[in-house]
Image 1 (cartoon, rainbow, N blue to C red):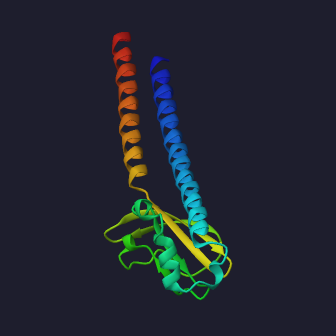
Image 2 (cartoon, rainbow, N blue to C red):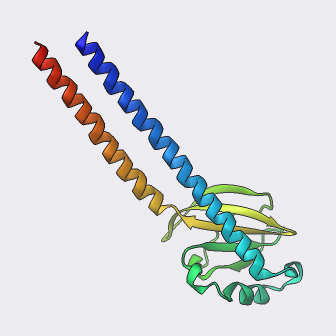
Image 3 (cartoon, rainbow, N blue to C red):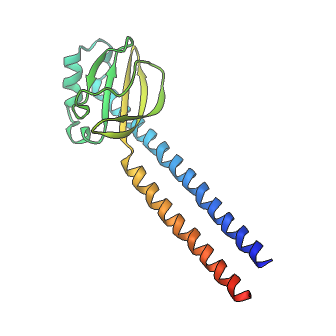
Length: 168
């Protein structure tokens, strides 16, 4: 009976740790999606109400106004409906975030030299704005969670096994 209790409690704890991992990861990714949406709203405000007729050099000028400090935190790309890139943030170093498309969606993308990013594509009349944020911090938090979870489950196993030995 004690062995059965030990196995059940350890498996239950391991399942709780796994579910917690999944939920925390999902919540953190959703938070990046909200952060990308907020930055899209900033991009829209910087472009102004007349953004539909702007030429690429005017878009570049407006994007640089007041956004230098934040430019390091976000990767931004603006595309025409035909997929042609009309603006790409300098931190992308010429790399592209996405293929063409104008429908709103969130997705993961990995770029050489930059790493894994969480990106959102947002329609802006005939254009699409893609805003991306690094996922490195999420990975660090999730690695820490996994390590702590493994230690807790291992401790649980050790405690229950020690209790089993005492019963014998």
